[in-house]
Structures are given as structure tokens and as C-alpha cells.
Length: 238
Image (cartoon, rainbow, N blue to C red; front, side, top):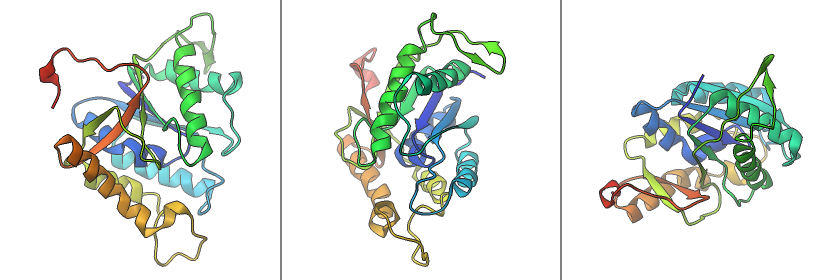
């Protein structure tokens, strides 16, 4: 199955938190989108890997993505080496996306930066035909995405561009709320973490509002790039 966009997250819920508004908008425009989670989030303060599996499936249905897979790397301990790169390469060659979205290049959680570099490196290596991979008994063909964009997560990294997600924020929040074990719940008896606070949950909207304000729209999501952006004409900018 060829997809237009493939979004990677170190943990289930990274994609929803970082770029689900953009995914929803692109799907509304006729694009096909898939998600690949690197780990099952088994080290999360709340919930369990099995619960996160169920939540990720529910979120995928809300977003309307065409595919979602989990590579089951070790949460907290995966590394950017050949073994892990090959697993990501297999996904890139399987779905052959034009655009890859992945974690922030620098963030509070160490897996985010590691996942970002792992996916970025795999995107380059995936285009080398002398790296041979096999999936489900079939030899895969080399494929390199045209661009890699990094969504913004915990840290307020200055974006290189923003996507207007006005009209998609309610559905974005719905997809995040699918992870009921992970976020603010005044009745929860489980331990607290930085992402379980009411302040963090409220920040999801006001960050989008602030990025939108700066761009002259109501709501936006920000991304950083690995190479210069280019447009065909000044009229392409809003």
C-alpha cells in the first residue's frame, strides 16, 4: 500500500499530540496517511502496553488513517543502530511515502530525539538500493521520501513553518483523549507525571492558538525541517 504521508512516533500518542491536526487536514484533502509507533510505551507512568495498544487503535479510527503499525522497540532503550534502522527502512519501503513526519529533534523525553534521528537516518538509507530488506518473504525496492518534517512536542522549539489546522482541533483533541490512561483525570489514583497535569492538557489548545495567532490563523501546528523550504511562487504562502 502506497501512502502519501507516513508519521512516526517514539510512543503511541506522540503523533496525536504533535501533528494529528495536520494529519486530519491532509486526509480531508484526499491524502492517504499511516502511523508507525516505534515502541508500545511500556515505561509510561500510567497504564500498560496492552492498554496503550487499545488506545492507539481507537485513536487511529478517530483520525481515519489508512494503517497503523507498532515496531515494538524497547521503550527508553532503543538505539539508532543498523538493526533498528532496518526495521524503520522496511516500513518506509512498504508504504513508500512522499512525506515523513517524525519526533522533535530535541525534547524532554530522550526517546523523542533518538526516534527523530533514527527515522531521519532510515529515510536516507532507505533510498540506497544496495541495502537489501525483505518483508513477508518479498524483496523490497529502495525508496526515499521527498521530505522529512519534525513536529514540535514538549519544548517550544521555533518552527520553520506552521500548518493551519483551524476546523480540526476538536477532532485532534478527541484523538488525544482516546489515550484515557495517559492524560489528566481528576479521579485517577495513579501516579502523576508531567503530561497528566491539567496544565499540560490545556496547553494543547493554547499552543495551537498561539502558533495560529502568529501566523494569522486561528489554530496551527509547527514543524522544523532538514533542508530549505521552497515554493513555486509567493502566492503559495498564506
